Length: 159
Ligand SMILES: [Fe+2]
Image 1 (tube, protein in one colour):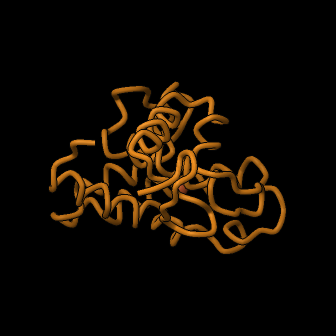
Image 2: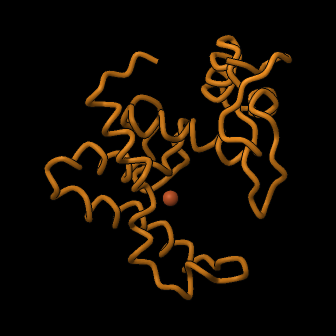
């Protein structure tokens, strides 16, 4: 993708720490076994801001802090906490959002059945996600839910 070393390290730190702000969310909300009400959602959504507060005073994590702050923004401006859109969203956060979307589709979650990497690209209505999966497929690499990274000779797979 042409991302230089320093930016890649920031993205790595931001990805690893993206939900660190949840440390400040009460367990009664974080682990609630039912849907959150509106007030609880407002509290939960503050985790992006809390994460930014945790990291932004640490010099080598300032870039990661921006990613953490922006990891729930959406390209169309409907995300949170600042309702940024498109290029207003820091580049590292945009990269993280695409990868996180694919991750949510290809790994088993309580709310979905995993699909192959290629299928994730076909199913997604998100152009950056389709671009990432197409780029990956063109390299003939494939990721499957049961093996984190694998190679094979069938379509969309390899390496
Ligand atoms: Fe989050």
